[in-house]
Length: 167
Image (cartoon, rainbow, N blue to C red; front, side, top):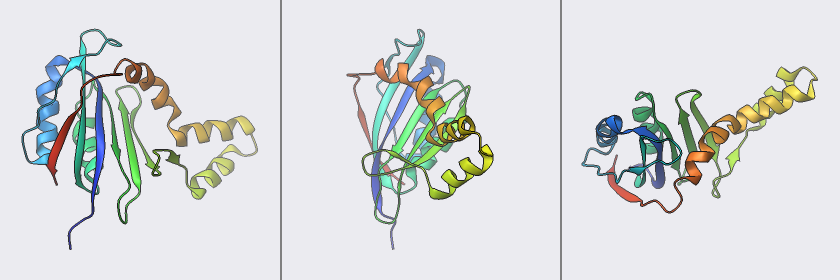
């Protein structure tokens, strides 16, 4: 029985130009095929470039893409994976300063915080409301959103490529 297929998007929000071949090699190791990204200047970080790639493949491909890219260091990226039969959606965000963040997402792309994570936030806070807010902020990946937001806005209207034969 084959794995369900899904789709997603890879956003390389910023990368030094010298890392572009390494990023493409990392993507090709996951897709097992040639990957051509269209690199454009990233105005939010002079000297860096950005690219977007829509992909389709087996459920779990988003995790493979994020794992392959997170070792490259000075890049900022996000990977989304749509829900598929038997699999929740996901989003991975990475920044050099914060590292990797992963969240489960619903069909609209909203982050879903589990019942256990919410309970943990209350327990860890020990009755301090500001600590609950801090824990929930962490669960929602707000620090990653704040750091990536200027790079997202700088990318509006950028070209997108398709990656096929993933997995």
